[in-house]
Image (cartoon, rainbow, N blue to C red):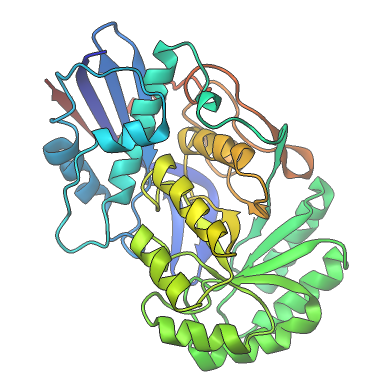
Length: 378
């Protein structure tokens, strides 16, 4: 296989409605899509979602990094078929971006495109290297920040859908009141967790979590900002609710520091945030070896490309307690694939079995929503 060219698209794909949390409000997808082509005309697609407050990458930074550093060394090379996730990860150059925590969103887009292309060439599903341990994936519902009335209206819709796991964005003065009302609406048999996106101080976090404990909250995601792991460790030792690291978990070094400090109970794994499937699986294995529990998260606004990768990962990793993502056209006004890669009743979704990631990308939709596109040739 010789890679001959690549196209990179920066998307601005509108949401059906705004998605809000304490760190950001989004009204459109700002994904970066990579299309790789080989000498036989086969194409593979990957996606990264830059988040300045997570990895430090912006859309412009990712486009420049891909066009200058990551893609040119791959083009023109003869590449054997990929037989393991690590093969794709090793092909991608290691080039740091000044002023960022990592280039993980950039790497993820290239890695997924390589995997999609290689397994399409082999007429094999990505499940060849991520064999499923379950036949279905069950996703969580997520209630964004907003008015008390809107949260309850969203919760009623989710109750009708039959979600068994719910996450609620918190970090506001009415957190306890809101969660009390939502627990009353859902009843005792629905699993509920909260996500503060780093909005609390150590004192405020302990105060709120102590007040929420009677509501049987499963876990508190990113209660504190990234950085002070001593504060995380103190909070973990006192909190009546387990803690989950998200923005604090970007690299394998972050994971080791969290483990060394005994600072978290859960890892929230997100494929774009963590640099692709190979590095995300490595984080999962490291966490499990140290008794860390797992959630597979998603980037808000990801298209079906990342959702497909997340579906394969969620079906492969057994014992994952919560899974997020696959909103598709429930959030995006239009997705970029022929197939609907979204959950259904009760948040459940089946496996993807077609070659590559298991999806058919509609390039006319990429062009439709691209604000900037770059061609890179050998």
